Length: 280
Image (cartoon, rainbow, N blue to C red; front, side, top):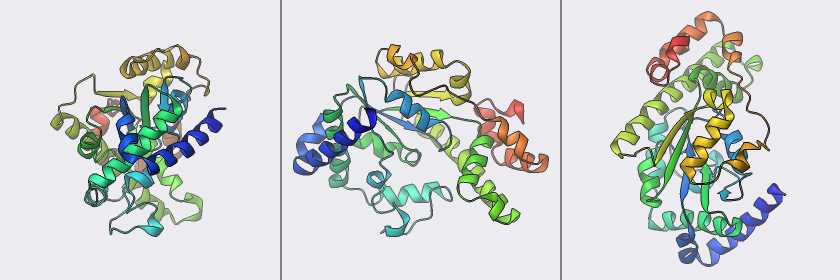
């Protein structure tokens, strides 16, 4: 029922956003964006939040709307590296193409979806927007942010494997990809912290939660998230999407000690800041 409702809401949303963008953009209420690196459990969190009747959770990352001139890569109109290689340049290139019309279009898209889904709170999760929080706040002034963070070594390994099967590539190629995903995690942690400070986001606007803590005590974590969003926690506590499973053991089991030491060195600052350095 959820997927069908989302599909219908998307169709209605696209129609409303196209026909009456000025009206639809005014319908956005209580927007909240889940940010952070991919492979951090944010997709699972999005699916869990989507079980709550008061939350209009957008069913995709909407990156072709956030980055219309860069995504997908095959039809990009702006010259920029992939976000995981140079996230700042990618994000600057993307936001450099933004205009009032682009802002209206994405507000209208989310507003129309929220109307169709009848949720009091709009939620969108994307792993490609955390270097453009100022632009997001200009577009959605009352926005809140949830940063779901996971041990960078687990994220780097999972991301590198996703970008290419290690068994089908030279070891050197995989190590280069692993180093790149490690640097991306480190840069992401530093940038999010910097932006939160510069934007003066208080606890009522920015929530950071570790995926490891969420897995260890889902009830406590989901209650915290529900309180932050301003909704009752009970629908989330049923965990209709299934249990939270922590898979961090893989990076210590699958990476050679030398490799683990190397990538830990590439993200020492982030690991320390997020409480992971003691495990290095």
